Image: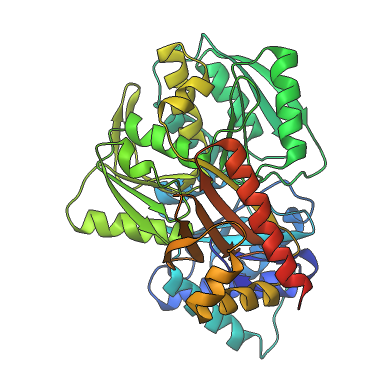
Length: 472
């Protein structure tokens, strides 16, 4: 088990039982020993809809109680719902979710009472877990009183303050429900704003939907539904509902960083914090300061906190996957939006739909108006971590290694190594190679002048990675 860009992840067979109890107990001990909680304090537990999540949640509840905390069961709720409720009542929390990864894997996201744990917390929790692992670890499942309704009520109140009444009445919107735990709220909130909602693709079987690298199969579904039901948009989210998916009137997914950019402008943000993987055109598209970070919500949160410490206001952030975070309160037409410094899929979905309704323009035209470089991303799944580490080590050894590796796709003009290797070519296109921080995946992000050029560059770059792996 290891921490990645957002929480702990691994195979279900490794996480169930002892491991989930071990890390839950370690989390509790870390909270108590660091003064972030005291014995008897409440700690929330939520989960997504993948088959292994209920049993892992039960094990975590038992371990948390054994460690001296008072667990509260929030049931199957989305991550932003759980996080907001924890902030509201001042309680730490655990979210059992593997986000977008397949059902044979799962994970745990950890939250202090003031928000997500940081990298220092991760180090301490891991050290405590290593020490606990030398002795006996009890993994007896437990039960706890439910606060699911209270958590949902609080989040619904927040999200109903975003737009004016009837703001989406002109739109016909499909909701791809699949197995995301956000599906019910998405339908309800869009209907609250008077959208004509079409429910699509409900599944009792877990379907891993990656909103950052949308699969060809998912795109095929979106395009089919868009034409069949004459939709203005299709929206969805990943497994735990903290990353948005928005497709335009043709079923073409919009980039997550575009959704973040639209939201930043809608909120009149002063500071925008976003990873290096987000589109390079963001800086030119708003009257705000842009801070670039490594990939992962902990780094975005740290960047937002630094801006607050400097006395800045109207501070927000987003990731390339569209997950949006707010560090400041923002005044909106429906009321004051309280800070939620963890990824949220609902706010970017609502703001981009509201812009389409207000301007009476299709989403494809709105996306084109920003004139961002064309970006594309994909990943090689089940790609051994050892191989991705070897590739990155080889590319970092010398300039000749990197330029030679990329010679068939272009000539390297400059390189940044903030998180993975991001090479800008002489024609202005970009190739960014980055191993996933929490799964055996190799990710590739590219930018180019046209869609065809971006897709071709992406395919060619991934093929270079495959060839490296085959030669090992």
